[in-house]
Every structure is written in C-alpha cells, then in structure tokens.
Image 1 (cartoon, rainbow, N blue to C red):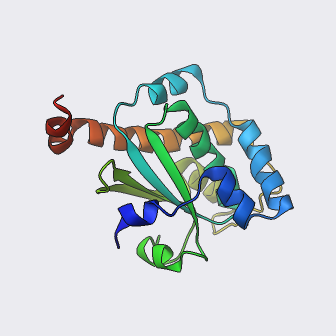
Image 2 (image 1 turned 90 degrees about the horizontal axis):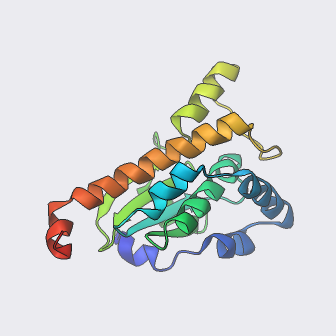
Length: 187
C-alpha cells in the first residue's frame, strides 16, 4: 500500500469525529480531550521537533481505547508547531488500511503509523500502551474493552500520554538522526 497517498485522504481530528462519531461519541472524546494536560516539559519537547512526521491513525469513534488515547495525539500535533501532521481513518471505512495494520492478527484500534516527510514508513504503535496494559492486567488478568463512559483516572491518563509521547519522540529521533534526511536537510 502507498501509505503516503493514503495519508492524503485522511481526516483531521475534528473532521473525523464529525463524519464518523455520534453526538454521544463526540461528547466522550471531548471529555477526554479536555482532561489531557501536557506538562511544560512535554510541550517544550514537542515544540522542539524539527523533522516533519506524518501520522496515520486508524481508529473508531465508537472505540473506548480510541476515546481514551486519540485526543492525546491531537494535543501533540497542536504542540508541535506543524511538525506532526496527523490524519485519522475510520477502521471500518478503510478496511484496506486496517488489513495492512493488524495487531496480534486482528483489526485493533487505535493504531498509529508513522511516516517520514517523504512517506517512508518509520514505525507503528497501537492498540494500548504499556501503562494501559499493566492496568488491564492488574484489574482483571484478561481482555477488557473500555466503554469510554468515564475519563481514565488522572494518573493513568498521564502515564498513557507519556507512553505515547515516548513513541512520538522515538520516531522524531529516528527522523532527526536519519543519514538520508540529514543529507537532504544539510544538517
């Protein structure tokens, strides 16, 4: 699949929710979005990104894990001064993309696919972060599907935000230290 071409047809955060979310789903996403708070150091880190990264996010407006995580990405994109270009894709409406991004053999969401500025694959990450899986394992030692009815506790939301930020930073450092991109940018 040509992921760079696919990126071009993705939707911005609010457009994705307007098209694919119900009023109730949009309310749940808004509640989490309002609860996400980036610490000053996190904001400074994101504002310091110098390489452009394209992020395709496969999601479902109905998905509790997406409700709890995707608003974080919108905050990252806003704090990055345009370096993080984020596009959303509904898992069911883009079955071709879902088929390319399975997690453990299934069409899980959310999945973030990271591309370089020129559309080269860099990384993929999803469906839950390590902090979330630790919490799920501690709570019930089995699969759990969050409902999105409640905003995650502050400490879990902060941990999940940091987990995702670690991956965004890792991708940025891959891009920043890439010999190919350093040659292109003369840096």
